[in-house]
Length: 71
Image (cartoon, rainbow, N blue to C red; front, side, top):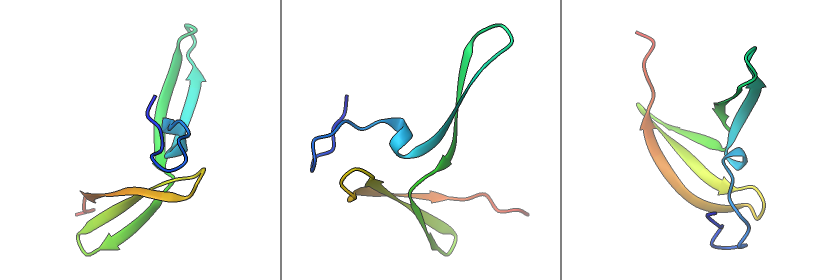
């Protein structure tokens, strides 16, 4: 498992995203990733996601993405 470079605790997907798990009628487990838990910084047409580890509150990095316009 990947670990935080600062506090050495293991990183999980649930630390950064809201994860929804449900069971289907046939008994299969379905998992969906919903929303980003971190901070999002708006910069014009671009947005930045700040990836911070919740255990030690250290910033792991930033990622840039372009959101879809409503037009």
